[in-house]
Length: 118
Image 1 (cartoon, rainbow, N blue to C red):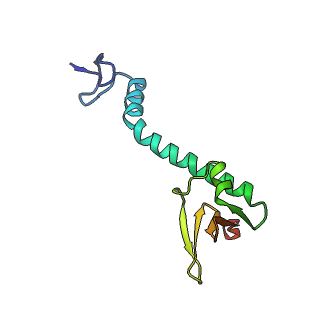
Image 2 (image 1 turned 30 degrees about the horizontal axis):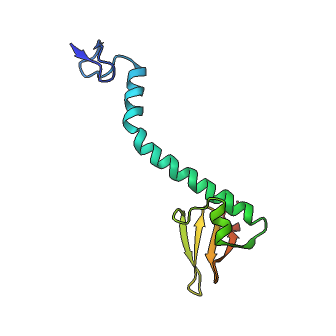
Image 3 (image 1 turned 90 degrees about the horizontal axis):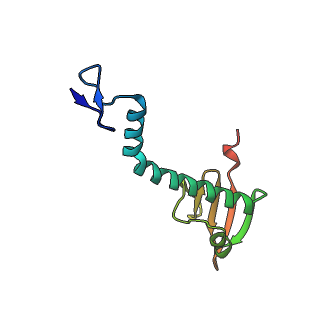
């Protein structure tokens, strides 16, 4: 007789059955995957926060702000969704539909990509 991989109780049924119940199977798999899901959850939460910050600071199609304002609101410059180079060689860093371009003296130009609105 085989024992449940989660709780240790005896398992009845098919020969290849590993768990005594759906609850034990779910608990086992949730525990097994929780560390990788936490990383994904944290990154997604910060990306959403970055987008909200850019959206607040850019009520129109474009706006300027400073690095200190972005940092004070909790913006994380290491997390973006894509890069978009311009014809002049500048690179916009995008968080979903909002992008920013680093200017001189710690200023940033924030833009909203209207192409994604459909």
